[in-house]
Length: 95
Length: 488
Image (cartoon, rainbow over all chains, first blue to last red; front, top):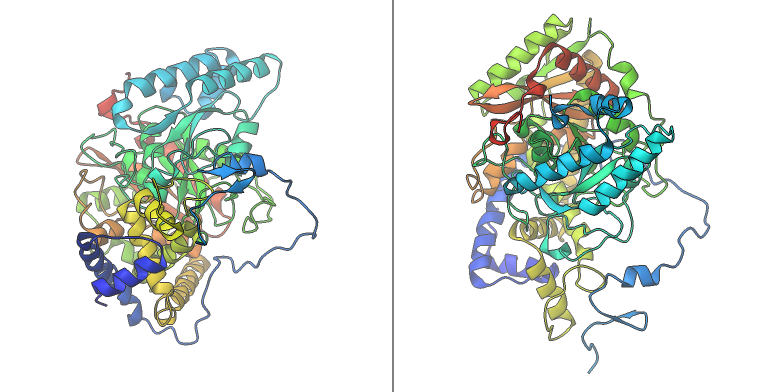
C-alpha cells in the first residue's frame, strides 16, 4: 500500500506528532515499505480463525474490590514538568 | 582466572570462601566500566550505591545470612524502573525521569542480595535491533567495536560479554534478549509470556514484552530466572503458576531428548558460516543423546509481517501516555495545549519510535483494522497452532538466533525493512509466547554465533537443561572478546 504525504499528515495529527516537509516525504516512503512487508499477510487464508490477543488465551484476573493504592500525589507530582498547589499546570485552554 | 571471568555460581563460592569480598568484586567492575567507557554500555553508573550495597552484602554474609545472589554485581536494562534513579528507556523523552518506584524484577533481585552497578544502554523504548536508536548513542560490540552489539538489550549484552557486570537484565519483545546475546557471545533467555512480572517495565508491546536474564552461562541464567519469576498482583498478565527449581533440572541427561529443526529456519537468508556453526551444535546434541528430527512450522514466514502490525499498534497506544504533562520531556514555551502535546512528543521521541507510533495508529484506524490488526492476530493464532503441533512430536526446537553475526554500525540504519528482518528467527517465539534462549555455539569471521533453543510453555527448565549440558561439552561460552582483552 502506498502511503501519501496527506495520509502521513493525517496520522501525525491523530498521534500528536509534527513533521516538516522533508520528514513527511521520508515517512511516507518508509511507511509504504513497511506496509508492503505487512501486506504479505494477505497471502494466508484466515477464514474462521479466532484472533489471538494473549499467547495463553488468559483473561483478566479479578481481585477483591478494595482500596489498594495509597495517595502518592506528592511523589508523582515531584517528577512532573510543572505543578502548582497539587495540580498539573498546562498552557491556558479557555480564553 | 580474574574475577569477571568467573560465573555467578563461581563468584558466590569465592565470596563464601572469602577469596574476595563483594566490595572488591564491585570495585573491580566499577574500574572496568570506567576503563571501557567507549563501549557505551551504561547510561547510568551507580558507584556510591553499588559500593554501599556491596558493603551491606559483605556484612550480611559475615552475619551468616545467605542470600541467593548476595553480593553479585549486576546491571539493569534502563527500561526497568528503579526508585530514585534515572530510568530513560534510551529516550530523550525520559532523560530527566527519576522513577518513583522499583519494577518487580528490580525489587526481587534486590531482595536476593544483588548489587546494582547501573543502568544499561538500549534502543529507544526497546525499538531496534542494533542499539543505534538510543538517545545516548550506540553501544559498541566488544568483539569488534566497529560493529553493533544487537538490540534492543545491546548495552546489557555488551556489558556481560566485556566483563562489566556478572549478569544483566533484559527485555525481549521480538528478539531483544536473544539477538544481542547471540551477537555478543552470551547466554540470554526470554521466558514464557507472563512468567516474569512486567510491573515497572516500561511498556513497548504489552502482549509480547517479557523480561529475562542475560548471563555468561545457562546455570547463571537459571539462578537469575529463579529469582525473577513468579506471579505478581501488580501485573494481571503474570502467570499464577509455581516457580520450579530451575537448577535442579540442569544435570539431567539429554538421552532421548527430541529436538526438532524447523526447515524454514535453514532456508535462504542464513549465512553459510553461521549455518555451519548450527550444524556442529546439532552434532554435539546428538553426541549428548538427543534425537534430531525435522518439523514444519508452515506459517513461520508470516511472523515478521504480523509482528510489524501488532507491535507498533500496541506501541502507539502505550506511548500515548507521553504527553509532556505528568512526567518526561516538555517542550520550551508552548503556545497552547495542542502545541505542548505535539512539540513535546515530536522533540522527545526519536525517528524510529515515531515511525512505529505512526504505523500502529494507521493500522488501527477506521477502515484498516480488519485488514491489518485483526488479520495479524489471526496469523498469530496460526503460528501458535504450528508450534503446538510441533511440540506434539518434539521436546524442544533448535535453530539459529540470527541470520548472520553482528553487522557494521550504520550498515542498516537507512533500510528499516532490512533491520526488521534481523529478527526473522526470534519473533515467532514472542508471538506464540514461548520460552526461548540463545547460547554461544561458535564463530563466523571471529564473531560469535548463537544457537536458539525454543521450548514449550513453561518449559524453561527443559531448554536450560539442554543449554547447560551443551555448555558442559563445549567452551564457546567461556571465550572472551579480544577488544577488551581476556585478562584485562
